[in-house]
Amino acid sequence: FETTQLERKKQNIDFEKMTVGVWQAQEDILVAHIPTNKSIKGLNTSLDGLQEGLNSLVTKFISQNTELYKNLLDFFSVEFTRDAKDDDLNYMISSAFSNYIYNIIGADASSKNTIQPVGILYPSFRHKTEGFNLALKPDIIDKGKIKLVDVFRRHIIKVKDSDYLDHEVFQAK
Image (cartoon, rainbow, N blue to C red; front, side):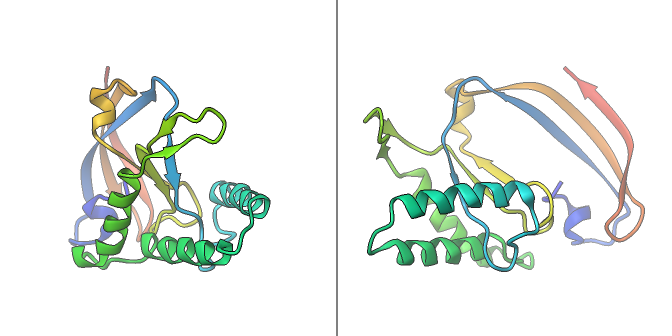
């Protein structure tokens, strides 16, 4: 919904149709997590829970570079949650960092197997108090890691500035 013209208020429109796919993971997938930052901390309980896990991990493996890494992650969190004001140039840093994440090949500490993220979980700019965004590499479909299980076509009507109503919902399996 976050990418629709209605939500982005690019045009003065009162309704929009959108298609939503429901996907099911066929195996565990590894995603990178962009943490919260000072401007959104405490607004989203789901992301705050992930942040607490990250904080305990950082505390467990503290080193001389910990503060540098925390500051770097905070910088990227701010970049991922900023208003790009419909200018694609404002996405350059988050795009470059995403490409970097997608090309990292690491090693699992317990199994010593190689691992590579197939997605990035990051806070929503438009909906700071609920949910989050998940960007996945398209090749995970070809590799059978996720499967399309349902499709919805929604006709959404704008009721007030930030209130919307589903006018029609069509489901196809």
